[in-house]
Length: 142
Image (cartoon, rainbow, N blue to C red; front, side):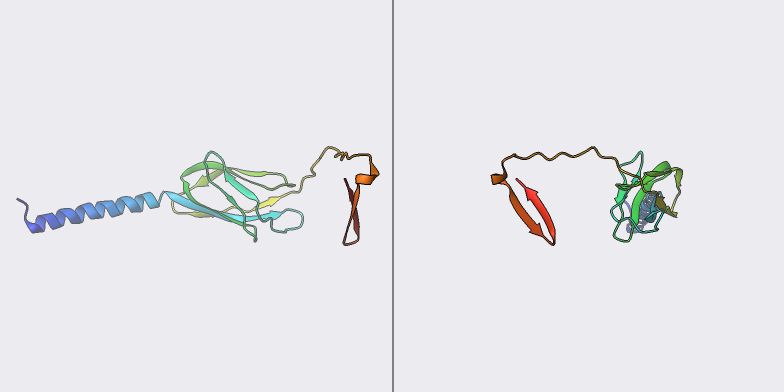
């Protein structure tokens, strides 16, 4: 039978091993943050998407253009940022190190969007048309 002192020592060793394993696991993740802005004007881009390729990790920028990606596994990745009306920018060979907070800022150049012609078709009968006036604008619809 084990003496109470031996049981206490054994429990202490098991507890220390458990705590040390949690510390080691916690130190294998990282945090990346930054700001996404318009390259020409410097304006922040709220709700831009930042994606860490090869993982399921991503973030959307807040109203100040800031993003945060937490608990990133160690490794080398490509991180990219995109926003509608802007070119997507990628940072390749982005290295995630142990216990290191990294800042990656993106300056996205604007990109012209091309759309096809939009044709709105309505009935030719003028008796079914209604007019709407709002703030000096005239809208005719069917």
